[in-house]
Image (cartoon, rainbow, N blue to C red; front, side):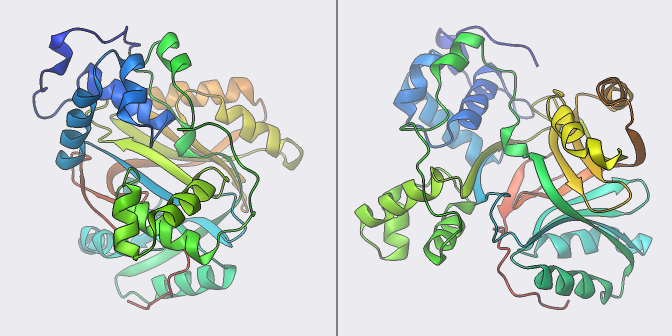
Amino acid sequence: MHESAALNGPTTQDTPSRGTLDELDLALVNALQMAPRAPWAQLARPLGVDAATLSRRWARLRESGDAWVTCYAAPSQVTYGALALIEVSCLPQARETLAEQLARHPQAMSVELVAGSCDLLLTVATATVSLMSRYVLALGRIETVTATRTHLVQHVHRDASEWRMDSLSRDQRRDLTETEDGGVQSTAATLTSEDRVLLLALAEDGRRSVTSIATALGRPESTVRRLLHSLLHGGRAVLRCDAAHLYAGWRSSATLWMSVPPAQLMSAGDELSRLRSTRMAASVSAEANLLSVVWLHALDDLARYEMQAAARITAVRVLNRAVNLRWIKRMGRLLAEDGRSTGCVPIDPWHPVVST
């Protein structure tokens, strides 16, 4: 992705052809990755266009499913009793139907069709280890499932919400702030029941207005504004801007399972986090004790990524690879084959496990 200069002039306001994101689209997504709920007026000067243009652009991107902002509980939350990547093998003829079925589970953060040692790869969050156990057992009772393998996450070195596009110049990035009104407050470490209600309210649209949320919940706007500020600036929730990856230039992705000596695990995870293509890095409780989710411009770049990882972490061994064939669901968003959002199944780690 090329760094864009300041976006000025009427040509940046033209609507791009379907199937691609133009410079202003990419810059807007990049800006919202940094400040997901920033007012349009705050983004206007860094992006070089007026607030009304940004508002119209975002409305079009969101309506078409090209881009969206979602919200979910922060991985560091102790209420995330279990976070896991689950490999699922199934009957060949059932793969697509099963993937769509699993994507409807609120515990399933993401569902991928993959090439590798399994058919589907799930990222699953539950509020307790007991719920994770029930979820895995329920998976095994699905007739078309032939095998599962669970990798419990011990520590998230880098969450994908921290990943940024390269669509803004250095000056533009400097002009933007990470939050709308600055500062992270010191608040309670755990999510409350009110927090969970707000998370679900923001899941489909992370930029949803306070007025809209207050109306839906039947609460005073002042109360919702206070609770929302505490949730979003207290480190208990993540706001994340995503885009249809194919049209943003990221045409391939993969999950790598690696092994490093236990004494090097934390430092190795931190090193992986510094690689440009790393979307997520985590320590896991398995022989492959380190995993990396990688986004690439082309599949050929995967070997280059592994070489970079080996140069930084001399003892690392890649034990397995799952190359993405298609995203069915990504962080709560249901995706079409071209990567556009077609709907939302909010992530809810507290939801009871129902056998299917």
